Image (tube, rainbow, N blue to C red; front, top):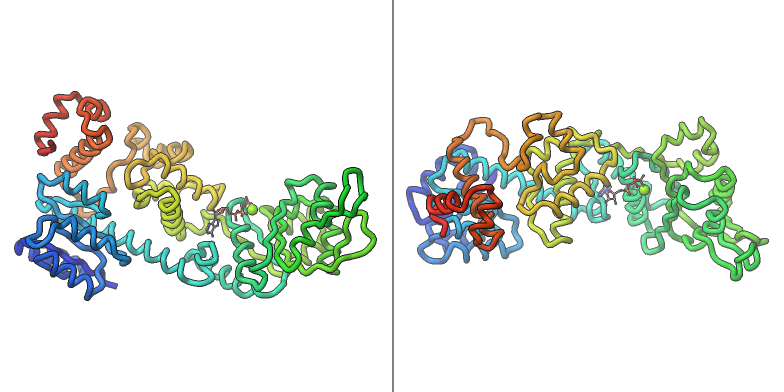
Length: 464
Ligand SMILES: Nc1ncnc2c1ncn2[C@@H]1O[C@H](COP(=O)(O)OP(=O)(O)OP(=O)(O)O)[C@@H](O)[C@H]1O
Ligand SMILES: [Mg+2]
């Protein structure tokens, strides 16, 4: 699908120059000479990216920006500035502009920013789509695009309504509980309890009374009769986590429940009928556990009416970007942040990393990075230690500086080094001044330059 770009600028030369440039790139281009005209076009046509001049004849560009960002539609706005208007551009960023570009700068820079904006837009839309699609994000989990996960999602949809027991296998953090929860939510039991019991975490004798409950006087301390989780879970779903860690005696008891749907409390003399949907999980290969004799074979077959193997993250790397975007989005909401994503270097490192803790680890890494990251984009320096070792292995030169990766990759068609350096220098000076509330001594210290050097540069960039 061709992306549509709208240029709002009163300068006829700029309009025709950018129109031609972007049409050559294969974009559909619309142009408007005033804010009013631009907004009218936005109402008529689906637009992906707006290039917005801040000095317009009829309205203030910042007002137009505010109005665009105030609407529901997903549009990225790139502000076109004159060299001297950096402070206004910074203001625009605060209002939600995606980025700003100097009108006089090299065209390749603008092309690069537009590409990035479109990529991000596509990702946001994909998340929206998944969120809206029933059975996908709406059920609290991300399916992803890999064939294997789509197959699993279809299987979940198919088995959810019934009562067949489901066995989930997969490494730690691959989403076994997430999928168990999705099965429960998509079943007719969704308004009843989803009860989780971790078989490894509870000592053997306690597990029995937890699961089956007890009658008054069944053992010392049993003063009042108590319902077990099997009864509490009646009409709902019971998730038996780490099933392979369950003691043999308990395995026999659970097997009986699966076969008879009857429960007898500890110290009790009669059975109670329960209607429970069982889902079990393990991060071990259960067939192997059966061979080794730690899991009863009959229990394995009873539980594994449907077996779902969740792939480790490193085997579904095509979903990495989607998960990253979804978690960034999640934490943006909960932390009130506006992080746009991860830098291309971070993505590269993430692709190399083996992710032993799978999706849980990825989510934790993103959360940590967002706490550390003060700018808009997550950089390698925000990643945990494991990654810097990886970075050193992938690219030794990246390990030394603290500012591990301020710049995007070298574009295929090259770049103007002088221009990029000037842009970066200006960017950090503005940021340092902002962070220190305009205190030149502190800003200079942050940048490891003298106050005079800072002043000189502020003058050069007309920052007052
Ligand atoms: N498909 C998914 N969509 C969204 N989040 C996910 C998904 N899979 C995993 N997660 C995230 O990863 C975390 C860990 O998932 P989950 O608890 O299901 O893993 P697990 O396979 O049960 O791991 P363990 O064996 O360690 O218990 C979840 O809390 C959730 O934040
Ligand atoms: Mg789990």
